[in-house]
Length: 89
Length: 404
Image (cartoon, rainbow over all chains, first blue to last red; front, side, top):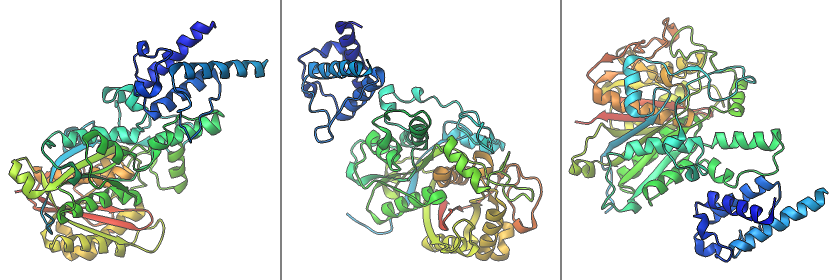
């Protein structure tokens, strides 16, 4: 999968799980300002973990606040996918 | 503002059961003497000994909830919300002080969520479980969902007493409205217990009938698990009257007791104490009661013990008091049982008809009562009782009056 295809898929999953229009999920959009409820973010992370068979560490102390913008989340997921691939190789 | 001993009207009724998706279909089924018990269709039965239940058939959650909301709803909460919407349809909320409106429900685990999560985690070695597993399965989940759906911000919680939970919840709600703590209570219970793991546990108790629930019949051989939800709206009588709304029935008494004896075997003395307490709370004598909706599980021990308890309270007059079991038609709906049975009792008072005990074949000398065998009958009666006697010896009885 190309980086762009993967990005689009990640955005698509976040949009589905949070009910937010994907057009609003631009790279620099701030998750807090998008009005994503914490349980919806947890649901999106669960779906991303299931889809890519990865573990996305989210601290209970911050419950997702480590992802300030949409690109923070996408970058984090892509880095975790890449790390998982390296481990598997 | 706080007054004591206000009259309490039942102003809304909602039901989802094996006889259909609303209170009207439940009542129509009762009038026909229909039986909602049959072979289990909704779950795999290959590892179950007993494969019979009273399932809610044809219930598609997507007809009632959008997909994102469903992520947070166990089947128990889905059934509760559908019944609550029906019960609240006739109850306007505009202009009310929502802090004086509460939700008091039977506590009911989200069995579907738990069963699915155990299967995923232990059976399929899933690496992760859905993030809403905890709020979906918590026993107070349905109470929360109803309070959120209608914006009810008064005292709200869930009560556990096994198979008497709904009756304890309704009784508590009744006392809270009567005492002035609440003006409106949404109350009752919901249970979606037809899950493989839970039914396997019931198998182990050896109380399930292989095919049919036949309360008070000499050949009865056990109970049948059912699922469903019964929700009632209780309001201060004067408020309801002032609004000019239809009042199907009035709640007039609530009695409780504990057997403090055997964990499983019921006690006639404990049950009789709860019946007497309900009459006392309603300031009634046994002579006033024209119908009893029995706990009537269809086990050998429950039915004979319940009849002994009734004989203790009613004496020789018991022969003249019709006593029937709704579980013969909708199964034992566990945490929803007392609520669905109170819905039936209220509708019976309004219609002045006696719900039957279906599947009855042969009188039992140990159950020498008029159990309204197999066919509904017309009757003139003013007051009725609804009995709930739980495992663990926790008993609750509600007294209801026909609304004039």
